[in-house]
Each structure stands twice: as structure tokens, then as C-alpha cells.
Image (cartoon, rainbow over all chains, first blue to last red; front, side, top):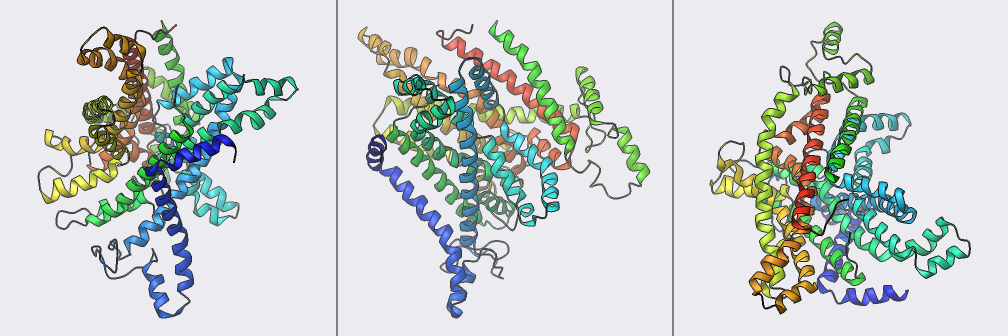
Length: 315
Length: 304
């Protein structure tokens, strides 16, 4: 490990809340990944295994509708008698996936944009960053909404014609990845630009330039590796922002579609069941608590990493 | 001078936004009359298309739209017949403005004091409590808080009306659900700003002159520490706008957000484009105001 990373790591370890958050997120990811696998194998291993598989199958219907949380159903059951714990974990998988892939998309756009603006400098920089300022004050989610409602049909039929039914089936998910990533790169671009600006006249960069290195070599080899810490911090803070966006869209019915589920769509299903006679609090509280917990964990983790790498967001 | 220049740039930006929105909604498959019950014999459908000029090429429709726009007319809504887009805006805008302004007031009213006091009492329990409140609020989205409020305040304890808009009691739950989320962000910005200013040398000078702690904090530090909050107000307005979509749909409030979401689901071209334009105008105008406030507060900022 290079020396700055080592120092950062030792500082990070002292940040107890951040370490706990990282652990909690790791446990959540493991559960999300392992539960379907475990259920798959258990289903072949006799009747008790089948009961286990049925219990943790998010699509398993039953007559036990609207059961409050109990030993049999830890988070209760929903309108179709499905086990809410399994549903929430399944939704967690989709939410986390959208968050991570979207953050990846925003990472690519933001780093490229910021690196080009910072390295080119002058008028190019001014124009590129002015554009970022403008986009920053626009409600970009409106564009995602308009984009999803308008272009999805076109892309879907194109994909179907191209013979890839599987891709067409998850067209909405693709839109969420790209759309949400495409509106979340602004902070990243600003940060990376600032870093590139401060790095590009350092002695080691000048030395490389004097030896005849081109701009791409300098950026890829000398400048961008030095922005690594900052970039990691902001990726960590972008993931919860995108999860929030996705839940927001799913809540409006513009996010993931049934039979898929995400935290947002589960909360929306719960809100649909609000009626004046009985209160099914667990339908809101269980997915809501997990969503809030995950957002908190990502934020604490991001804050911890930021302190560890000692980066400030200065304009 | 700077502001004149900004205003001057706003116009092409609005044109660009209107063009993009128009084209996006236009290339979308499915017309506004697809979901009508099927009385539409080809002739009737054709007449409807002709009435709203949907049979013309796209560029011609766009020019027609611009021509009407220059007279302040956003055209008829394609879905809500007998209503022009202007009518819909005239009905929905005041509702959304009241909701937005109240939520803005709540988030600033809670966020600024909490951020201020947790910075002043740095490291004591007030700081921890304030900071924890702030980060918790940032992580509780409106669509989690709102159904919860509805279930308990609205249904179980019957303290507040569950939905709709009209009396002051109707505003309480939507405003809390929308505003609390942003109060957390504002509190965090305020605390950071205050801590940064308190490290500055002129604060030490002010204390050395023997000014009371009260004067130092409120007259000297606060004024600069609030600047990050002021510059966040631009994006905050945009966030409040979009945040209100969920709140309006949950509480069935007839505001702009409801119409935008429904409009884009119904392919009501004129309505969506009109609303997107309205949002753009509002945001650009309000952002100019924010910049102006910034200059008034911080005299070190000079716009060339």
C-alpha cells in the first residue's frame, strides 16, 4: 500500500462510527447475495429445506395477508401474503445495485469532465464549469422523468427487435442506471477539476512534461492516480444520493416495475394500503427503516473516509 | 452589469431548454389520444390531430409554439380539454408556491439555529445532539416520513386532515414532511460555515477588542457563516420543487408537480413543455435573487 493510503487507513480505523457503518453495509450486502443462493440449494434438500426456501422467497404468495411481524414473518406480510423480510432484502439488492452502478456512471462522467476542464484550463475550463453551475441549479430529476416516460418505449422496441428480450425486459433498470448517473456527476466534476488544477503545475508533472509526455499520459499516469482518495470519498457520498433518487422515482411509479421491487416501491406499496380502519405500520416502517439505515451508513462511511483522506470541498 | 449579463444569457438558455423538452416529448411513441376510449374513427382522430396541429412536421409545431409563447400563450392542454396550459398554471402555481415557501421557511427556520448552536457549543452535548439530528434528517426522505405522519397524526389520532388542500390545517403535514429533510442539510452547512468563520483572524481581533461574545458571534461571524447556506438556496429551490412531486401525489394536492407527472404519463406535450419552461424561468429568476443576496451579505464578492 502506498504511504498516503496507509495513513488514511489508520486514521479511518479510529473512526468508530464509520467502521461500524462499513461492517453493517457489508453484512447487508452478504445477506442480499447469499440468501437467494442458500434458498436455491435448500430447496433441493428435503422438506425442511423447502420450507426454508419458501419462507425466504420474495415472490411466494400465501393466504396470510397483512400479518404483523412475528417469529414466522420477522417483518410481517404484505397484501399478497408475501414475506416482507424477503421482499425488503430483495428490494435492498435492487436499490444497492442501482446506487452502485449509477455511482459508477457518475464517476466516469465526472472524472472525465473534471479532468479535461482542469487540465485544459482557460476558456474551455470556464465554459465547461459554467455549464456545471447551470446544471447544478436545474431540477435534473425532471429530465430523468421526461427521459424515462418518453424514450423508454423506443429503446424497448429497438431492443426487442434486436432479439435481446432479456435486455428489453430490464430496459427500465438500464434507464435508471444511465439517467441517475448522468444527473449525479456534477459534484464529482467540480472536485476532480479542483484537484487537477492544483496538481498540474507540481514539479513531478512538469518534469514528466519536460521529458515529452503528452497530456493523456500525464493525466492518466500522474494526475488522476493522485485524485484517488478524493474520488473514493465522493463515490461513497454519491451512492446514497442515487439510492434516494431511485426510491423517489419508484415511489412515483417511474422506477423499477413489479415483480421487481426496491425500497422505494415497497414503501409506495405500503402507502397504498393506508386506510382509515386498520394501520399496517410495518409495511412502511420496515422498508423505511432499512432505507434510512443504509443511507445513514453510507453517509457516516463517506464522512469517515473524508476525514481520513482529509479532503474539503472547497470551491 | 453582471446581473444584466446573466439575464441576457438566460434567454438562449430558456430557448434551448424549451427546444430540448419539446423534441423529447415529441419523439416519444404514442400520441396524446391513444388512451381515449375507441370512438375515434380515423376521421375523428384525424380531425383532433388537425385541431391541435399534430399532423404538421415537428419543426413547424415548434415554431408555432414559439410564436404563441411570444404572446404569452402556452397553448391548449391536450388532455384536459377546454383548459389552456395557462389556466392550469394559474390554478396550480399558487398552491405549489405556498407549499414551497412554507417548506423553505421551515427548513431555514429549523436548520439555521440548529447549525448555529451546534457550532457555538462545539464538542458539547448540544453539538452532538444537533449534528445527529441533522444527519438523521438528511437520511429520512419525505416519502418515508409522510406516510408515517398520515398514519398516526392523520388516522390514529385524528389531529390533522389526511389529504387535500385548503385550510391551514391541510398544510401542516405536507410542509413538515417536505421541509424537515432540507433542514438537516441546512444545519450541516450552517455548522461548517460557522466553524470555519470562527477560526478566522478577524474574529480573534474582534474578541481582542473586547467586544462581547454575543456581538462577535451574531454581528461578525453569523453574517459570513450563513453564506454557504445562501448559496445552497439555489439548488434547494430546485430540490424543493422536485420533492414536492411526491408530497403532492401523496396528499393529493393539486399543485404543479401532480400535473407534470400526470402530463408526462399522458403525453400531454404542451402541458409538459409549458411546465418545464415555467420551472426553468422560476429557477433562473430565483437563482439571480440568491446571487444578489450573496453580494449584499458579503461585500468582498465583486462581480466584474
